[in-house]
Image (tube, rainbow over all chains, first blue to last red; front, side, top):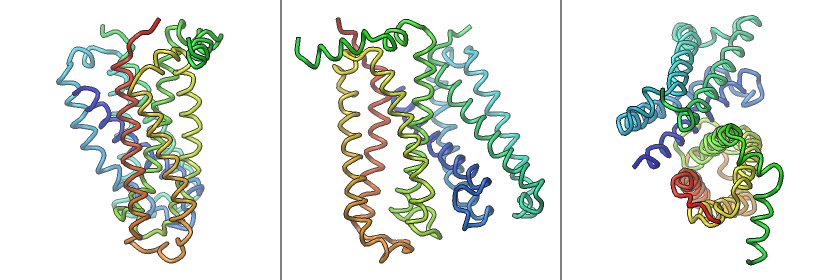
Length: 141
Length: 168
């Protein structure tokens, strides 16, 4: 059962990181420059929103199967910290868009901040993946 | 010992393979890079397959999604092949004896053939259905096959780690 749940978890992470990468590259204009930032975001955010519950459920299943392996593991703690940071960073990015879908495009400065946030978020997810894999190698304390 | 066995043992005893096997922290780092690269491969190519099947990005033409996605897929694929080869080399005979590892290679070859078939045959008529939400059956079939194969590759890859039996 554990490898199966891990597989589902990895596939859902793939969906998040693939879409997150597309969004980040769009802020640089490397991907879909002919489509607006707002509609590109919407296109990929849909995939991310579908994946998050899958990640949550598969993650909770793995924790409940082997609580000590994760809950007492420093790599797991790091993973959760990075995840929390990522949630905060993404909320900061998304919140202004609720009122104005073009918020991050209204000035050069905002565009730069938007790019920065997109890549910080991506880097955090890379950190989540690395610390996730290291749960298997770091001894639970 | 067959020629293949000799080659696998030679690979295992090369300097870099020995270093990866004997240094405690190299393997997990390379493995984490491998996992990251594989998630990007499947996360990007999956976006293309979902468009081909008709589930996402319907307001965007297939050829544009192709152009958005494939450079990312190929870069990540290159990274996953290099990192995967390093992991394999560190214990080549053991991996070569593992059914899931061999299945993974077969599925990779099948996914390659499917991608070749798409570019060589299906994509030829793309001008006729590029912007259509509902693509022709061969295109949808190619998308479904690719998704199934890539999910299978991840399944086999994950199972390799649970089923390795040390060989002499």
